[in-house]
Structure formats: structure tokens, C-alpha cells
View (tube, helix red, strand yellow):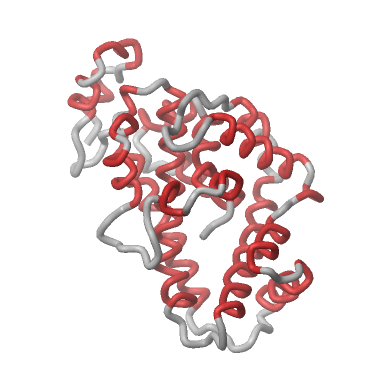
Length: 282
């Protein structure tokens, strides 16, 4: 699945997409640090030791008919209405939902057909090494993009969790935030290769060698159609992440409209959308 640094790039792309309803964009921009932290926080189990399904809300192989974001909102209904949360909390959950959409589409478009079900692999370790080497290559592309966006570090630092997830303690989210920020501030301390290699029980040098083969198109056997699958994945996931945001904020035909979502939380009247925003929500 995409790395935290990829998710930061993807979250930024969703926020900048002109098809995102402007009321949503304004709310997320006003709490952008929390939104960005949320877009990486799904992977916090790397430091908490939780099981994947406790933070990702799906298992492999993924089921396209059951979206992880919907599972999370049903399991924790206190998170399901952004108009009942503080601005920062709602932005954080929005980023979390964006992350889940990207992860699920990676599972469907890339991981399942090329790794879980692929017939190219002599053993599970070879398969895992190639999968993670591909993620390393894409991670480095994302880091190059993030170096052109220096604001991302102070934005992440500004995010201060306050009981944002009922299944992850605030201290773990702060630890996760600081770990991501430290790597962004010190490119020589990027941990992606180290973490992946340790997880698989291989040397960083071995993982780096396979990553170089992928970059130079010298890995054999060749995986037919992988480049097209990656393009398809990015198209699907970007659009699914936008849809997740529209659904969460009540700007989608399949969810309750803004008016009904907001009516559940009259105490937050100061944050109610302007009437003209509600009228143009669909």
C-alpha cells in the first residue's frame, strides 16, 4: 500500500482538485495540518503494534463492495458526522478517509492482481520484496515532490491530537507525527527501506538492489501491464478519495445532505455553512 509520504502527496492533490466542493476545501484548508496528519495516521499501527484491521478496517483480499471508510464510520458513529466535531478533528478524519480510499484501491488494482494472485513468484518472500521495492521507488518520487512543498513540515507540526481516534491514543499519534516530521526535516534519516527490510527479514542492500532493477526496468520476469495498472490505480484512488470527502461532508447523493448532518449538532451553529453553500451542496 502507499507509504506515508505518498499519502501526503495524494492528500494534497485531493485538496487542490477543482472538482472538490469549495465549502469542503475551505474547511480542510483551515485545519490543513490535522488533515495531513490524518492522511498518514492509518499506518500508525507500525508503532502501536495493532492489527491491520484495527486501523485499516479491511482485510486482504479486500472486498470492493465494502468500503473501509464506511466500516469505520459504522463502527465508530461518533466520528461519522463532521459537523459534530471540532474543525481540526473533522479535518483529521477527512484525511484518514482519503488514506483508506487510496489503500483499498492499491489492494484492488495492484496488490491483488500482481502480488496476491500473481503467478510470477517462486515464493512469498520474492513476491514481498518486489512489492516493497516498488513502494520504495514510489516513496522516493513522493519525497522529491514533498521537497518542493516546505510548508508541509510546519503544517504537520501544528496538528495536536485531542482524542481524535477512539482506537489510538493521542500520545501514539503525536509520536507518529514527530517520526514523520523528523524524516521530512532530515532526508538522510528516511526510514522506508529500513522498516520494510526489517519487516521481511532481508537486508536493506537486497531491497535497494531490487528497487534499482525496477527503476531501470531490468527486473525479471517482467510483470506485464504493471505500469498501466499503476496509472489505473492512481486515477481510481484519486477519484475515490474525492468521493470519500464528498460523502463525509454531505455533498454526495448517496449520503445525508449537509442540512440533515448539521441538524444533528445545533450546538455547533457557529460553524454552520452559509445558506448558499448548503443550497449548492449537491
